[in-house]
Length: 96
Image (cartoon, rainbow, N blue to C red; front, top):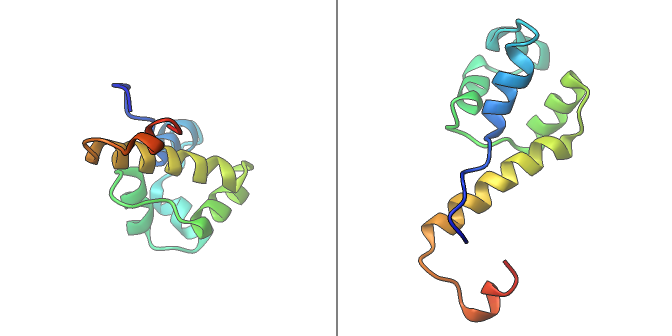
């Protein structure tokens, strides 16, 4: 993987593009989707991943697709995995 910036996390997207503009608190979101506020806080602070179930809930709440949230999470997961690997076998380097 070439040196490139880390993709925007789903939590950062959630905070900056949805919660702040809507003046919605993490607690309000948690109550709305029926989860513990700690789960939302961990996502916003990048300490936990967006699951398929959470992607469905966020998609329904903010009128996005679940794929929007899962793709953002996938980009982070791939970036972090590539950062941990020193090198890839030649057959894998061609695919990336």
